[in-house]
Length: 326
Image 1 (cartoon, helix red, strand yellow):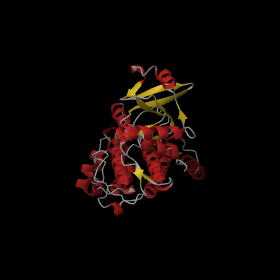
Image 2: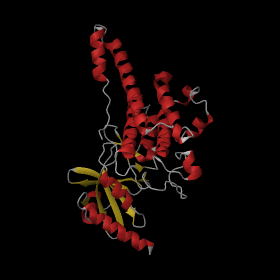
Image 3: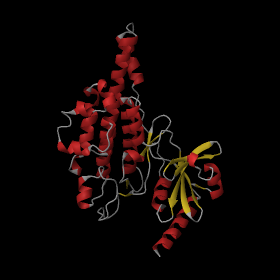
Image 4: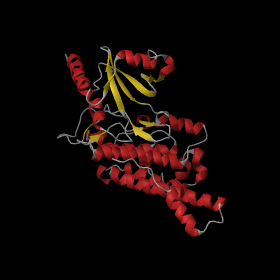
């Protein structure tokens, strides 16, 4: 009975999408993906598809999974740092979500590749962190109602061709404005769950802040879900040994502010953690300082004839920070 009701709810949801999203026919989806050929498979049940001149991603979903909430949320969201849902499809056997294609895949896999290929620069890492923070700031403050993602992790952050990050997978997201913000059914990913959520089931935007702190720690260390080390303390003192080995030559001073921000997000008491607005502000400053330092270093090496006034002007122009508008 529940499955039949779920199917009916999804049909209603998809029918309502016609005003905001494209409803693809299964023939169009099959043609785009080569009938879901192995060569089009990205990972799991996710495939790339050629829809005219545009490459999109098709995610095949079981009809037993309720996608209505995810579709409903993504229909309302228009932000650079949140994945763009282009359309949906229902062939009577499965549901399909059609979204934008992200060339570099998920952050988790990209960090692994970076370690093997000789490292990923700090400027790129901080920009990725800022992108994720901007997306969460938008969800917590500018959607109606506000949403808590509930499953922020490196595998739910995707990177486009310019290595700009977007948050994906809203299957566990829920309104932050509900009368009851406590659940007895814990969902999410171990290692990213805030202590108060594990212990009491309390759901607030601060559980996303905590998970973001774990992601930031992974960007620094190159290792997965390092929160256990942060909870033991002394991580700041032992920073040099935990920095991603491929990036240690850059120097501890570059990443110390980033580590302190991560540890602030990982504070045990939710009220002691910063808001995502404060996180965004901190990351903008960190990225600006990083670019200014890099620009000054480049100038000192490549152009000794430039006057201090010219150099200051150049730094100001070079240090513009890329943030998404909301």
